Image (cartoon, rainbow, N blue to C red; front, side, top):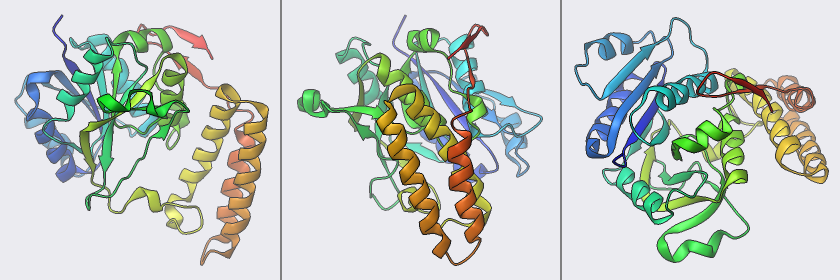
Length: 300
């Protein structure tokens, strides 16, 4: 089989950005077997736009309800792994704009590694060129730096490439994580299986309204506080499953400290504190089930 990629794009009510994302993907169609677009019940004209598209590469699923970002990625990766004709899955948000050479750089490194990797992630930049969605490096990160690869243990779903047999072996992202942390869990699962890497030559722009590196519980908008609650729960789960007890304790203390610091916020102080405490607490009882492309269910 020729080395081709099935891209997965999850979208919700960001039509102008989705158009940019799809244009950027179609500009590198020589590397693509398909583009699986999961439309999370958008209400801004996205559905009409996607229905009018006449391109055999673009495979659209419009959901009747918004199932959330994490479940959208679980659904999309399942579609790409089960129905796609490529041998890699490339995951991204609808506000990810991959550069013209992004997929070629990922495929080049995949070939160099002989597909022996957990995941490859791109060099993600914000609109002003600053780094954003920064991958966490591994202890042996410099090992392959001479060939443009930096060892990584986690990344976000803003241009992540996975060899399909890894998905068959390890399963799909955890849709029940809802938002914020599903990508950390999945990339940790992959890097725990095989060495994973940041690819410096594969550049993608994340066109968010602001650089997400600036997000914190104390200053985030009130209508987004709930995302931190999900994140604290999800990351406690990740620490429980992939790290030692000492790391879990450190995260609990750090979360409590963050929650206490947030009570000096300008508004919704109690809500911010509760998000940190209740999210952390629920992480000890959160035990989602991993689904596989063949729809088998296996307890993690």
